[in-house]
Every structure is written in C-alpha cells, then in structure tokens.
Image 1 (spheres, rainbow, N blue to C red):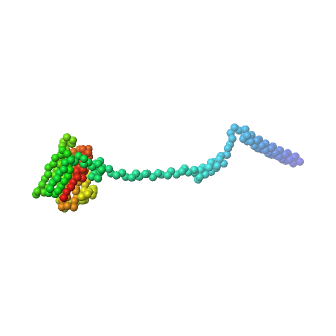
Image 2 (cartoon, one colour):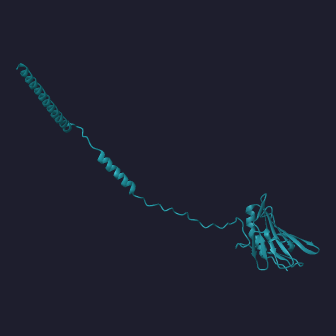
Image 3 (tube, helix red, strand yellow):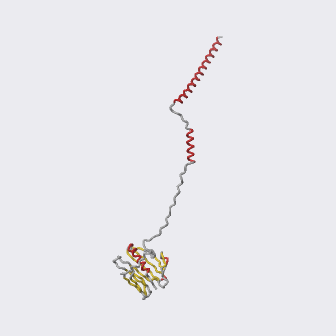
Length: 233
C-alpha cells in the first residue's frame, strides 16, 4: 500500500513539473514573440526590402539600354572640293592681253629674208650675215631704265633641227606657230625663247635675256609686242 502511494505521488510530481515546464515554455515563447513585435514597431530603424527596388532598377536600366534615346546621327559634311585654280604664272605669256607695242617706234628691215620687226625707241642693233644671208640680229636697250639693259636676239633656225617635244606650250599666230617654255633662271638672269615655226624655208627664234625677276616681268609685254610685229618672207 505504501509502495503504491509513493508511485502515485511521483507521477503527480512528474506531471506537475512537466506542466510547469510547458507553461514556462509557452510563456517564454509568448514573451519573445511580443518582444520581437514590439522591437519591430518601436525601433527607429526600418528594415526595407531592397529586392523589389533592385529588380525595378535593373528593369529600368534594361529598358534604358534597349530603348536608349538615340541622338540624331550627325551627317558628316563632305568636304567641299574647291575647283583647282589655274596655275597662274608670275610671268606673262604671249597670249596675255597686256602686250605692249606703243613704245615700238623703230623698224628693223632686211632684204635677204624680208624680215621686219619693230623695236623700242632709243635702242640699237647689230645684225649678222652668213654667206650674204641674214643669220641673226641683236637688239639692246639703254641703261637709263634697266641696268643692265635687256638683250633680245632674233635668230634664223634650220627647220630640220626643230623638235616640238622640247616645248611646253604652243600657240597659233596669223602667219606662223610659236612654241615656248616658262622662263628659265640662272643666277638671277632670266631667259625666255620663243620658237617661230613657219611654212617657209626658214624658222626663227626670238630670245629675251634680262637681269632681275621683277625687271624681266615688267619688260615681257614689250618683248611679246616685238614678237607680234615680226614679219618674214
């Protein structure tokens, strides 16, 4: 009997202890749940879930990348190609309009080839004959305007020696064709030769030699004026 009583008492104590522990566990869980809820509500810090915003931001970036606002394409302006300017020489040429014959008051004339040409007033000349036939004539001016004065030489040429490939330019005149190159310069001395191709038995050349570039240019119109007055045959 005493043994059964002791066993019953032990079960009661065990059940009471278990009930107390369960109650304490429940109370502790309740207290902790309330504490967590209170801390969440009272905390000055707010926990923000960034997952949605990151996703939205990423979506916006993707949209911006895919639907990027394109700036108007710059149309590259083609370089305007200016028409190439003509190679205007510093010097004159026989086809220039400023050929000057006003000062050509003297006339050279000879009978063997019936050559005639005008030359400037105040100038002098000397001619050369070979076998009683004109071979050439030289004209030179006074030193009062040009120092040294210009030197012009008219020469009779053998037709078979003519080579048109030696000349850069050509021009048809009234009674003949002229061939010539740009003036040549050696030690500030300028030379220009005009080859006169005729349909007669002889050809001719007219050569100008002068010191100084500017002086040569100023005299060129007179030189071409003399060419314009040249007659033969």
